[in-house]
Amino acid sequence: MSDDSATNRDDGSTSAAEPTSSAEAEPKKSRAGRDLPAALGVGFSLGIGIILILLFAPKLWYVVVAVAFAIATWEVSKRLRDGGYDVALPPLLVGGQAIIWSSWPWGTTGVLVAFVGTLLVMMVWMLLAQGITHAPVNYLKNLSASVLVLAWLPLLASFGAMMVVQDHGAARVATLMVVVVCSDVGGYAAGVLFGKHPMAPAISPKKSWEGLAGSLVVGTAGAIGCVVLLLDSQWWIGMILGPVLVVCATLGDLVESQIKRDLGIKDMGTLLPGHGGIMDRLDSLLPSAFIVWCVLTALL
View 1: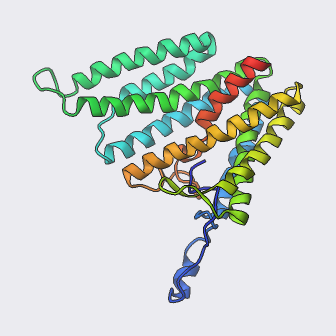
View 2: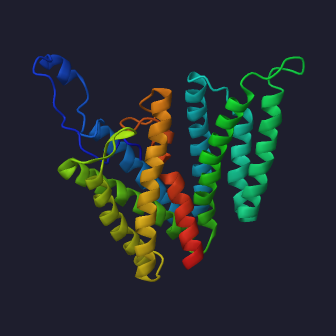
View 3: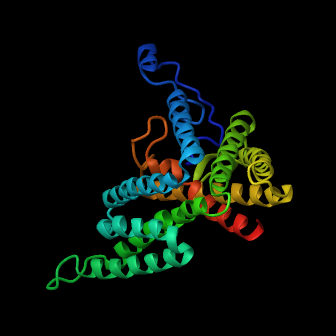
């Protein structure tokens, strides 16, 4: 998850001169800087919904991923437009859906074909956006931002979607979700209780090395448990999956943190109370989905 959500320590201090009525009027924040009750309520509801889908209608996972990333693409594109990047939103929305849904019947081949096809469409779209009588404005800058969104969101999301049609597909997706949650919980607890040494203060001041250590311990334990109990496989696969996923999830957090820092914003959206936007909940899941797909495809 994003750097504002749950990995590290904030002293939580307030000014003694602050009026009591003003403090009482604001939602109670956690030391990570969020409205913790709202965040827990939303997170619990989302978790229960995903569990029910995986248990009773796993193929609906594709619908969940497709809808979530259509919203996330719109959120990120809007923020980029506000920051001066004129991204190719229509091709991104249509092509993003093609990338995700193509992975169902055709796997990685379908993903690659849809990705390259969308990329070509975006190149022409941005070229002719001003009409044939006017030269494109900031063509390279805007095209680069559009390609970033395409690769960052629907391309990585497709790996999380296609796992559900593999053997033990629901268990693979559940492993992804459980290990990411374990990483977040371990990082939050260790960061709040022990976090004193910032990991990357210039990018995300609230992330600490102690938080990363907590993520590694709890995330690896969760990975071992999922591999043994859900996937009925060897425990050592979890020893590989856990640390690699935690590191990639943390780097995913930092990537989004830097993008938001460049844009001068706190959250990508406001749709989820206590969490920000949809994309603010997906930042660590995106690289994690690719890692889980790679490791489990190679070792199971």
